[in-house]
Length: 455
Image (cartoon, rainbow, N blue to C red; front, side, top):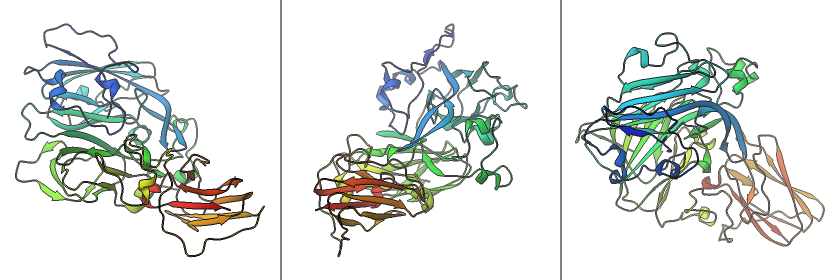
């Protein structure tokens, strides 16, 4: 995950109050992307290599922005520094942290430092700990980073609405004497997205949507299930090489529980809520239940090369976004997904222009006459029929008869639908002869692949 730029000082050095965030520019922070990328090797972390604690300054801007949660779906979010989750803050145990919050939202806000042991006035609870930061205002949080571990930060003003809109991010406090070392380090935030919850609703300028009004106790609905603010193929996979040992930090910013499952691999639980499990006392699992606000650090060893699925094992969460990959360097899927797999881009199934590969042949592809409209049903995770033969000039209509969002995209880029909601459809006229393979960009890795033969 992307981290904010920060400046280290010796404790006796006067602090520079200039903005330290560089949104566009060079340096290590700008080189990382916003979701799931590994941290640099320990040897490269020169900013935290000194023996003595240092002072670190960060700038966090709470603001509204456009955010792509899924292919074809962009929403208005509230977050920090124009991203969801907010940028990773990574320091060393004992460092002094000075974080300036700039509130560019239309409502008051604060930041709570979840898992950090600090003074009450820095805890970020509006009303109890501090006065909320009004729109246009600033506040400087000043505390010592302790204890070490996987911590996080989030709004604690109207958190039932501000956190689901994106006001959360990771805070990693590296220990001064680590129990374990790793080749790669990933962070994944779990969260839900409610399409009826908009900034206008959160600001009190619009009523809640009809679905949310049916719920009680302030509960919100969930349309998408996100990892690092994305769903489906927009989630960055866990990449590794054979023999490497990877640290995976799981953090749940949502209001629901999720179940993390790795195919082809077991993992060790090496920390809970950021607190290390003693060496020799780790639990080995392949499925882990994580509740709201919980964090688990997992150690995964690369001992089974290939391309493997990682997902929430609450199946409707997976079907609506919470799925990514374990992707070994130099390996491809062994199934039909290999035809659109893009290892270099780490965006399997998105925008591919791969050559046509072998597919299982259906028993009797349907035939239609010139000028007719042929229909392909989009059921959850499959097309029906899988393969369709039509005459040139035929219009094919893909009709979503499932409960989930789907899409249609040709392997060669000849057509693409964007999001197709339940009950909606997409049409394309086939005038050229040939064999056109396509997939659902939301569920292609789960086998939702089809073919149209134009004769």
